[in-house]
Image (cartoon, rainbow, N blue to C red):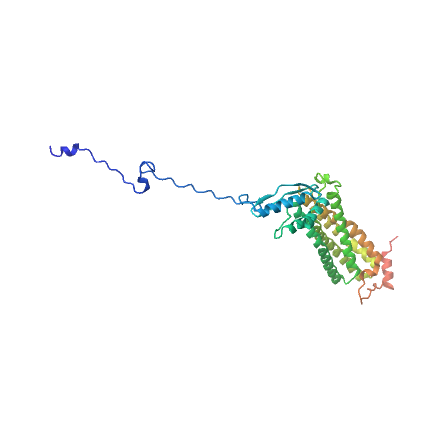
Length: 354
């Protein structure tokens, strides 16, 4: 039959053709297999700031400098331990542990000695090298030194500006000087309490602290600025009322009595509010917050009671008219008492009816 051979003939197999390296059967893998993609490299993790890169090859000069520093510093009195230098490239990292506590004076002296004597001696033998003495303790010491150097400037500036403003406001010489001295007395009292409690450990357990701790260097500066402002506020409020009464009556003693009587409740109420606000921060776990809170609360309490209501009235009564002395200004005259019929009518009006 026609077409029989065609039906019986097997179909021709189609062989796929693959070009390129994938067509090399038996060498690169199965026919038609896809070559694996290369695995991407993991990104390198950046080192923390200040951490040594241990992959760098140590420099010989850094090795010699590190060993010289280790030998020199380990012989200094007050050094308990000096670790082996860690050399990375041209950098040598040396760890030094003092024999005393971080907040004691001996540790501060040790840092100053290393910076002023020992490290310069090593640098003299290795010209071109640079050595830095850092860490937590040196940073705190540097901050304390900076604050200590700036503290007198701040005190003089604040007190000087306050004196000028009070002189302009009250036209007096004695009153501004007395006000500044009284403010410094309140500040000194608060500094003493903070030092006795936190640095000497008097009753420190009552505040939730286990042992005596050093006072942070910026705490006195912060307290001085804030306490001086609060104290001057109470002083201006009190003196304004006393001066008003003095100009009306011309009697320095009577003006003090009337001024204290008119402002005592207001000053006491305002001081109580500030005391409770500051004292509410004492239970905080941060010791620095405890220092500032206790110091401010004590300063306001001392200023509003002992200073404003006791010392200031007593001094102004003793000085009398000298409080309000000003070049070229005359004393205010007392008001003329009533005479004649007006006096008799007033006396008759005040007499009790029998």
